[in-house]
Image (cartoon, rainbow, N blue to C red; front, side, top):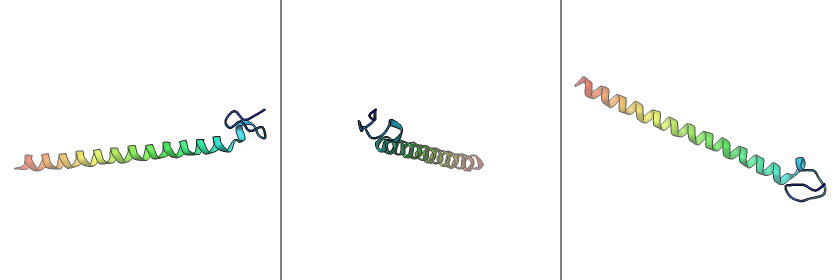
Amino acid sequence: MSCIHCGDDEHGPTMCKQELAIRLAESKADHTDDRLEMASMHLEISDLRRQVRLLQMERRR
């Protein structure tokens, strides 16, 4: 039976190096997406904190 991913007859679909490389790249991309999302949320939180501080300073005047 040839590999459904690369067409090679020497291995089954679970051993395909191309498929493993694709899965690894997808996993890294997912991890990067998660880190970018977390960084974006951190920036939003920082901006909200800055806005709160400015409003508190205005209120004290």
